[in-house]
Length: 497
Image (cartoon, rainbow, N blue to C red; front, side, top):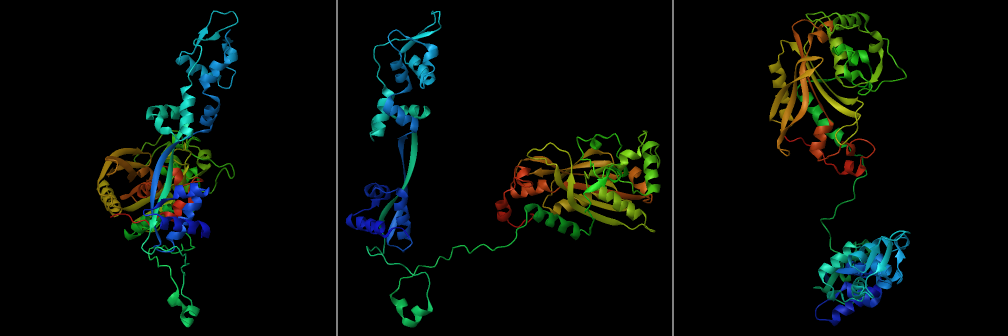
């Protein structure tokens, strides 16, 4: 509680007047900091309806540090004028003065001084008038003495531009008597004790009213990151549609499974160090299904299964290089190869949500590490229409109903489609994912039976999370710049459907 003496003084002053008192005036008369009086006002408010306090704000002008120096010593231009003797002063010497640069410019515009450039030693500055009126200093002195009303607003703003003056907003309280006003301060009890009930003393006590709108103490518990909340929602959608989650716990992948098994040529730009992180230890992998590897090599270099291939010299050294996986489609390739090794083919629906890594230039929408959401369906006779139908069902569960598809190119899908959704906030169509039908050159070397089609699609986890939580910079969602308070404050994610 604030100092009892200050509380009593405030109450006595309110009692002595018909209206009220201003907290700023009380602080000035007591020669104390205004915050001391503000603290006393809040203490009185906590005691009930003893006083009423209305917050007010007022503005006044104050001199800056430079303004106080100018009020004392004169303006920069006046100091420059005073420094010039009758015989003149070299401009180079004048510029060495503390007020030289600013004062020279202002004195020239006031036509107090002139420059003569005809001297051998360099330009020389002379006075043009015998005496000057330093109006800047005069105005600042007036404001300093509290008679700012004599200085018009235009002049004040000019002084503000010169950083000699600043406008200060002062907040104070207008204090008046409350319904239960009294000059006697009685401390209100915060709780009813057994002793009060036993003795009956509670009848004479004054109790603080209950604040039913007060928030309880925050629970000391863990908090889910927004990415994990949205991930849970996506995972639930896949499970509702009958998908099985793929194991994605291997961040390190060989180039063979990440690129070659997907019919992505070894000279593709995505396999360059500018786009992919290569490992130095261990640098290579050597454990591959040899018969499958030979079929992949053949379809790349010679063609096969109705394709002419890429017609280049396929090298095992490139396929052995270890990388941080650039997409979870490498996991899909492993799962489809495993499916093909079964005695009898069975239709499957797979999904995965996990991290991938690309050597991206970091900015507000790109990171070197992000999450990919992928769905894969394998069955006999699947067509592009089936893919579009599943996508409509998938995105409808996300609350996205306006979809468009645009032809695209992927090395391992044909046909391929980019997926666009209409963004109501931006009033335009934005890309939300990519999709396609896996090429026979990818599926048949695995041993997938002819007639089986595999449709797939993918999107990022970060983009829908940023839209859902109103985050504009991806670095505020993932990485060392994440504000943990954002994690605590973010509500449970509910995708609007």
